[in-house]
Amino acid sequence: MRMRTLGVIGGILIVAACGGDVQSTTTAEETGSTSGGDGPILTIEGRSFGSVPDLAPGESMTIVNLDSVRHTFTSGDDSWESVELPGDSEASFTVPDDLAPGDYIFFCEVHADMGGRLTVTG
Image (cartoon, rainbow, N blue to C red; front, side, top):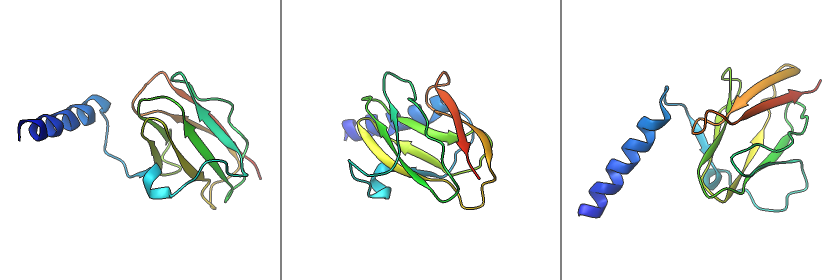
């Protein structure tokens, strides 16, 4: 019972540490993604996003988290649903069909120093 209480308290502390509003997220488990897809890949390693492929509306990429800690792929202006990536996991991200061409800032909700720019092509 004590371990369960500590787990709940730990979960609350993690949520509190992230700060900000609670947003809807997609987890790697929910996407059913698998390794080795044929499409573009964005890698997270060493608390850093790798090279970000340019994508068109409706196009997908696999985000691979090689770190042992949780990260997110979150839009700076709520242009897409945040993607949750537990440590050592991957998830699929699809550019919303109605997203206009341009540059979009993204970040990790867990690590404020992590971020980048996604270019959506026409």
